[in-house]
Image (cartoon, rainbow, N blue to C red):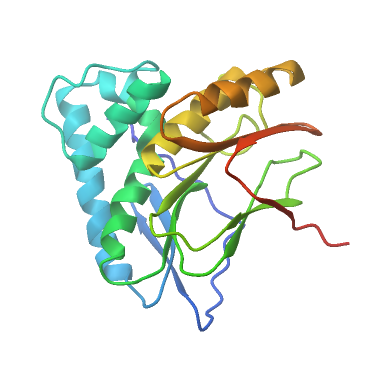
Length: 248
C-alpha cells in the first residue's frame, strides 16, 4: 500500500521553550506533527496520531479510491471520525478525500489535547489547528515568491479553535494542479480549510485567477478567509488580519 501521508523535513519549526508554551515534535511513520501546549503532551499526542492513522488506513484498505481519487467519493460506508471529516470536507469543495488528511489529523489531535491544555497549536505539514487565549502571529511561507516570510496572520483569542491551512505548487510534496506559491484558507473546521486550500491552489494558474479564486473559496459555507499568492501578486478576502513580519 502506498503511504497515505508524505513526510518532508520541516525547516521553519522552533523548539524554544517559553513561559507560554512547551514545544515538541511527534512523528509516527510519515506523519510529523509540531505541537505547542502548556505541558509536554507528546505521549498522548503519539497515541492520538496512531489512532487517527489507523482510521485512515482502515478505510483505504476497504476502499482504495479513498486514497487515489481526485474527486469526492460517496459517504456510503462506515468510517471513523478522521476519514469522515475528510469525506465531508472534500465533498464541499470538490477534491478527493486525501486533500483533507493533514488538516483532519491535526484537528483530531488538537481537539483532544484541549482537554489537557487551554492553548494548543498543532501543525501538520503547514496545516494548523490553533486555539489560543492571547494573540499570536502565524507566518506565511510561499517558497521563492517575493512575499514569502514577509506576511503573517494575526490570530486573536477566540472561544472556538481555528484551522489555518496552506497549499502550494512550489513548496512541499503535496499534489497541486495549479501554480500558486501559497493558497491559505481559514475555517473553524481544519479538515475543510485543508481541502479548500488545495482546491483554491488548483484554481490559480495565472495572475488573473487570483481574485476569482478567493471569491470562489469564500462562496463555500464555513470558510472564514482565503488568501492566495502567485509571484509578487496577492489576493485576499474574508475575516483575516495580515501583519508585516519582514524586518530589514
